[in-house]
Length: 365
Image 1 (spheres, rainbow, N blue to C red):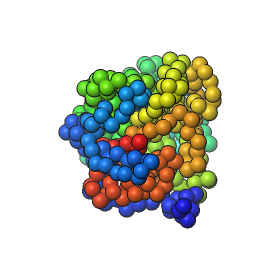
Image 2: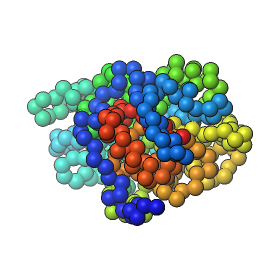
Image 3: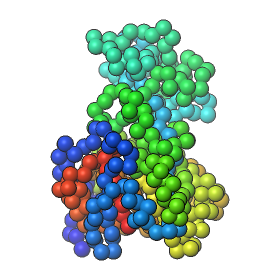
Image 4: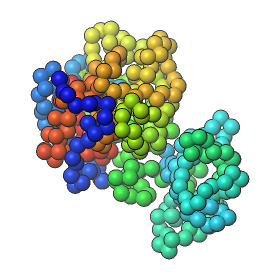
């Protein structure tokens, strides 16, 4: 048994050479490498993601997060002062106001407006000043929440996602290093099965799947279900507390439909594995399990899965390699154990796997 204090964030750090952070995806989705970690024996194998259908058992069930990333990164300026502003669309409220967060010089005040410029224009500006577009999107600041986000009223009655398509860009993680997503990002930073708009980050384990790989899984009698978790701003925020027990997870909306709930429970009852594709699928499934509803489940969850957590639905996990000190590496260790997880990460660095959103994958069996 490890004597390391797993409640201390320092236990979850590891050294990652910068050159292993993937700023671009592999040429093809299923070119990614796959580390296979067998929990019962501690054996670690080096395979390819396209071998996945042969690594799972017939009648196991893959559970995917079908959320779709919206072009929620916005650029603009404070209308009155011309000071630059940059931020994120978080969600649309029932009253059609938007919840946003952002940063600018100085303190924003209720009643002022932000002028939003198209992302392509913001990317092209070189003189440090955004010019006012012909038909700007104006956001009037109504009220600020305790978490620093704002409720704002757009000056347009158009649908929120239509406005984001015009003015926004996909909010790529900071380590990718691009201010505005390009054509390749617009294709590859979405899963091929994304159909529920609302996320501001991709469920990255799903990025490896092609329609052909999904078909080969079906041919091997591996079942498939979909759940939804709209990945929120918490995905960009590291654990700031020194103790995990002091960390407050951001809530994210998720859903398990009645049909998916029935499929998952039937698979478990038959003695087969639920293979969560990504940590967001894990959190969605386990949040629904805690609710113990037989008719599906939807709502917000701030579930923080740490070692000692009792998994009710998930038995296996496909996931990418996560940031040091993140809630995601902690979740992986809750399923696989601390020692084995950190050994897998050491091996990944040693074998030069590619890390993070556009990187390679790990399969915990």
